[in-house]
Length: 115
Image (cartoon, rainbow, N blue to C red):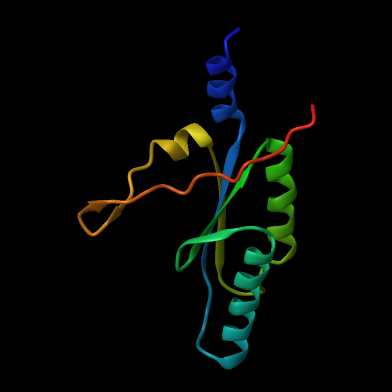
């Protein structure tokens, strides 16, 4: 089979994990907890998509499960958090804009596969 077949197949196997959250920030303690949650997402390789949406590219379902498990381990005691996975193919179909101008999409980092 040609290489484009495998490339296309990888777009369905690789995933983007999106974490959406709305955390309380009324008190100093709440702000500290929300800040800690965001910092843990960044430490785990997530990048900020919007203020309350972070995303991370994962090369496989197993890799995505590891990062989802870490997010669940660090859930704050209050607030609303959503976790969603979409395939790289679905992510590629998203249209992004800055104002009325089309924006560049984030490209996944190069992964080294041994097998």
